[in-house]
Length: 104
Image 1 (cartoon, rainbow, N blue to C red):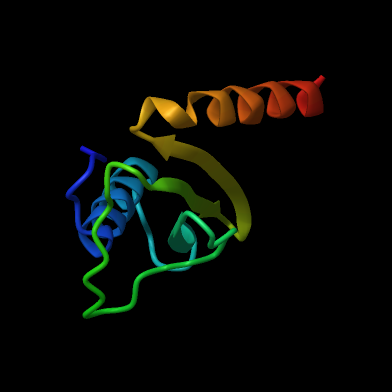
Image 2: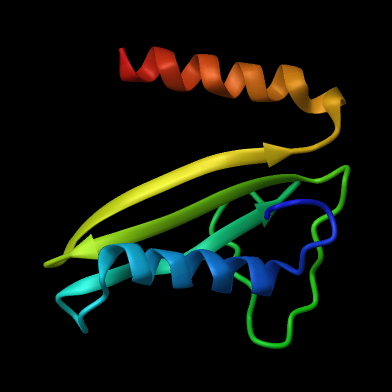
């Protein structure tokens, strides 16, 4: 569902709703670890749309998505980069290669 034209507030709300469903949210015991980040282009990290923001993902954007789940205060963080224009394929390949190298 993440594609050009999506309102970032809606995207974050959908991701967080699915997170809550899958983790079977129960108050402070388990649920969303932190607000979903969707940093576009020059914003390196930790941008989360505020209520009323009308930022829309564009074809030429590079977006870093970051969300977390927590169970008993232990956070699991998941992040990935999204781009639709093939001119960013070398960037995405470099990101994947450096992540793989860091894991090894």
